[in-house]
Length: 368
Image 1 (cartoon, rainbow, N blue to C red):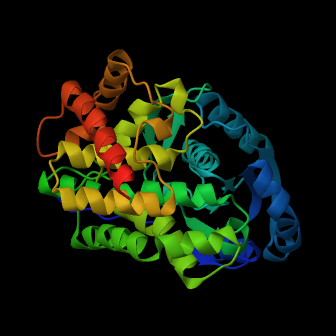
Image 2 (cartoon, rainbow, N blue to C red; image 1 turned 180 degrees about the horizontal axis):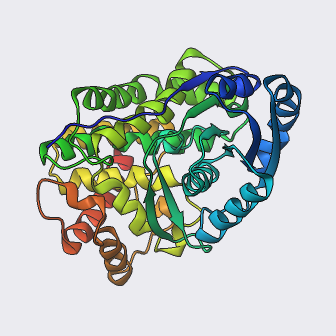
């Protein structure tokens, strides 16, 4: 089986990077009209910079306000807007779902795409896939693309304005990266791009985890006062680039499948993606029978930055067996990455792990 590694063509991060967006697109050979699919926050923060810098790079732009959910109707609306504008490039500016929509539109129309996140809340910006939900917010399916984004541009000044909870959620998403890659590599499973992992992917996934442990609490402290520090910049890179490349080229396992299962419970809909992935990581570690020292290191990290370690923190303080089974069945649906573990993963095992991870989290919180 071939080893395969992938990444965005170009990654740019730093203070006021938005002002370099047009020049970066020009460097990639893009000209003409850009369709910017933007959240309201992104448009409010960045539109003046776009208007000032695009003309000098020979670019025009039009903005489509993102409706809030990466759904098939929203992707269709984006395609229609791009066609009306005769767009030559699609730009996503906003959170993970905005960027997922932009990548889907670009792929459908075979256009280059740039991802400009306004939060460091997930590893979505760098990936060659989109997670599609129903208009009610229930996970539907993943779409996979032929290539990664042409440009990922992370403006530290923009992200500094985002709620700290978004940064913490991004760390929850990144937390799974190392453990998923490790499981996938042990099982000799294919990664997201259809090959087995490279040494580079494994090293990036491990660096992602070490960066979280080393810089997570300092980054949260800086973010709370709106300060851009080296620790915060490293966490933003871990959340976005290291996690993005690490999960895609390293491989997936149980943690995101548990997230997908949790979306079937309406009580979790106000919880962020990374918050659910963080608990999914604990479930994965329980399923794998990891040593208690590993569990305690991960739970300690979660508590230090404000990630959930119990079902109650996800709104599921009274999780019935029926609802637990529905979550578990969704988590092991055909095609789910839970099946990348080096052992059979059943609904019964996931149910048991949900309750056991919760029990471990309750006990850990009571001791610290």
